[in-house]
Image 1: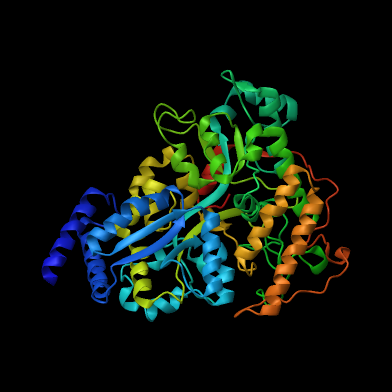
Image 2 (image 1 turned 90 degrees about the vertical axis):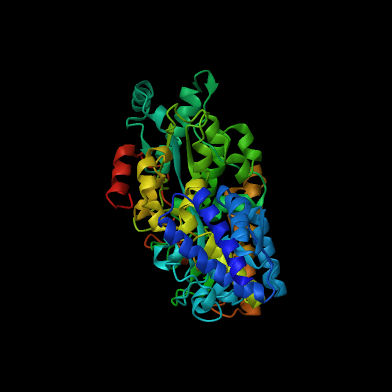
Amino acid sequence: MASGASWADMKAAEKWVTQEFQPSTLSKQQQLDEMKWFIAAADKLKKKGVKEISVVSETIDTHVYESKTMARAFEEITGIKVNHDLIQEGDVVEKLQTSMQSGKSIYDGWISDSDLIGTHFRYGAVEPLSDYMTGKGKEFTNPQLDLKDFIGTSFTTAPDGKLYQLPDQQFANLYWFRADLFARKDLQDKFKAKYGYDLGVPQNWSAYEDIADFFTNDVKEIDGKKIFGHMDYGKKDPSLGWRFTDAWLSMAGTADKGIPNGMPVDEWGIRVAADKCTPVGASVSRGGATNSPAAVYALTKYVDWMKKYAPPEANGMTFSEAGPVPAQGQIAQQIFWYTAFTAGMTKAGLPVVNADGTPKWRMAPGPHGPYWKEGMQNGYQDVGSWTFFKSTPDDRKAAAWLYAQFVNAKTTSLKKSITGLTFVRDSDIRHDYFTKNAAKYGGLVEFYRSPARVAWTPTGTNVPDYPKLAQLWWKNVAVAVTGEKTPQAAMDTLAEEMDAVMARLQRAGMKNCSPKLNAKGDPNKWLSDTGAPWKKLANEKPKGETIAYDKLLQAWKEGRVK
């Protein structure tokens, strides 16, 4: 019977490998050998009674492909059914928080942002994969996993040096612009006459603002349709929080120097002690930078630009509603754009795609605010990663771990990368398929083949409890959008609330690196021109600076960050 079952399973593997999982970085025989290992490993779990598992992720193209196609392939090949739920990112974080508080995991496996790495490390509720792969999970760890091939493992490694999560998809936050419009001689001449420098990719926020003003108020229309120089979103919703915590403050220059996130003050404005681990405060009065001049400047610009240069409906949109708007053809540039939208921006027939299938748009490194200095975090990268709770029953956890490895196996991952364009393996991004098709993706392939792919970084380890602290951001940003509070007052409240949460964590204690707040002092004692929190600049609008796109692209091709 067993040999009959495995024959049937190999037949399913043959079908999927031939019909779905092509191309691959492996030969067809290597793919089938890898599938044989999955069948044998799943067999051990089926004998222990594991028939079905449940996992969860946010809703982006990559996860839709996993949920609808890869989960079915896994079931047909291994005989274990996977319910892969797709929910909003805010709900993933909320359910994860519930599981942490109750001590019982709602799902057998989670794809959750590596932004929670500091949380997982401090609470000790999540299984460190470094231990699991050599211990309880050893016999269920694919010998061909090849962790060194994963480009994002530095982001899922905690201060204790252990890997806590396995990257499943990655996308960066970059600058997006209509290269076809920027290349128009009439617009170039008009821009230079007005501003005294070339229309090109903005290097600083001053140039971004000038370009936004130019398209909105000078160009006004392209082919009889209104054109806007900026796009954003402002609805009171959890996604408004990511608009800031996904490194907006450090793009302005709020944090300290130091890759990945600034040390000792990170892009949330949280300072850690000399041990690089113990959070000591977010308010300037405690040495933090959440309500510092650079942070207030960042919020002010976000509000002003949305009101002046974005379509009026942007104000009432969420992240997922605003995402597809630039593809409709009426946006000239966007400073805060996620590469997760690339796949949706390359569809034939869109106003932003040429007849030959190449895009009219390009992506480039995001410009920086006046407080930014060389050596600071460049921008944000999302790394959705497999996460497992210690409390999940061993056999179900092992089955979920098998599925996590299956959707990132070399057999399947190149096809997944082509579908969702959210690379996790170096071998996939360097495959001949992407060399041949690079022109379709507007700079994405060049970015992910360059060292820039680790210079754009997720939330770091200064943040002690991501779910509790993240929910404070959107509520406070929202009152600045509506004008109920000034940007300074909004950031003051946010910093105070962050300190209050950290004080509660300090009282309750955490397994590792619990917060230990500095006493409140005179903010002026902390404000400095040598480190964060940075003193207010006399001039927050230096002259605009731009660069030709080809120069930027060449830097990536030559292996430079920018």
